[in-house]
Amino acid sequence: MWHNGQSTSQSFLDRGLQFGDGHFTTLVIRHGQPEFWPRHWQRLAEASQRLAMALPPRLEIEQLVTAIAQQQPDCVVKIVITRGYSERGYAPQIAASVNWYVTTAPLSAWQQRALHVERAELQLAIQPRLAGLKTLNRLEQVLVAKERMERQVDDLIVCDSNLHIVEAISSNLFWYDGDNWRIPQKKRRHCRYHASRNLCCGAA
Image 1 (spheres, rainbow, N blue to C red):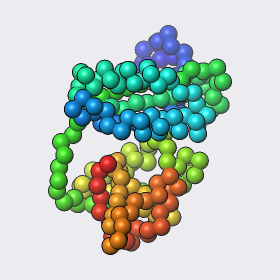
Image 2 (cartoon, rainbow, N blue to C red):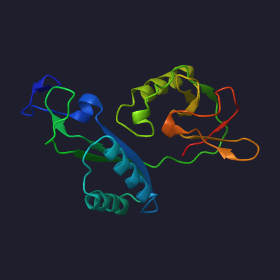
Image 3 (spheres, rainbow, N blue to C red):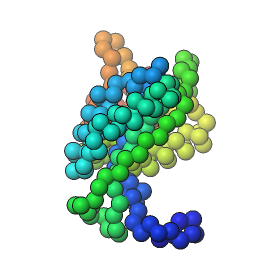
């Protein structure tokens, strides 16, 4: 195998790189405390189960997150789990061991201001088997982010191919209907509220 034109002894690629065969969660560490860690672990566990993928030991991941919290008390942590290395071909190898990666980034400053938000031209595909999972295949979000830059707006409201509201580019959506706060039913890639309704956008 060659990497950037240079020969390497590694013969197999990570399936996360080859096929987006993996999932992730992104959590906030604030004042040295991981926020909502049990829910993030539950997300990782559910995704691994639904993708028929092994799960790394919880204790190992928790120990690393705790160490990061001590070193970087205010940051964003991304945990990525892939099905591991494999030869050519889509079919996963039964004996393959999962890989997991952790990265950190500075915690963004909170800004409370009105946003210029429009509806995205790109629409999300509907795939019930993957609905609600944060898989590594984020090409739709990449293209929507590019669209936002080209249109020079703060964010875009993204709909599925049935024009049901799903989300913003990398934020959740919520709105008040006069009686209750509402959010799109993201796990189904479906929402009872059509894109013509008014709503507000907020990062979560």
